[in-house]
Image (tube, rainbow, N blue to C red; front, side):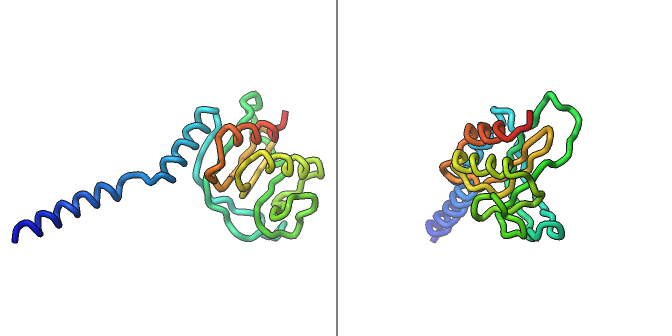
Length: 158
């Protein structure tokens, strides 16, 4: 009679410990984010609230952002343009599925189209300021911190 109870207790203890073990996905994301930090990218979780009144983009986006800051420009600067993966009122010049959250030029749209091919991931949000670039992505299996860094550097204003 004591054996079934001992086995049950053993399974409960083993199950609890196994449940706390990180999944393969968690390990992959931790490795990706650590590699990004080693490349001087800032990594954080946040909730992006788009400009619903101005551009018609409504849904908040929650995820991991990767930010590259130009360390030579200490002063905060204004938002140059912003793009989100949602339906909005203005999508001129952007790849399919993306909309302007703050309108940029055709050259900005061309730049965004150029990085999407090199990203190997799905772009959810992109903000380009005078001194930094913030990108929120899906963090797919094909994603690498090297690609993130390359794309952010290509968008960082000089």
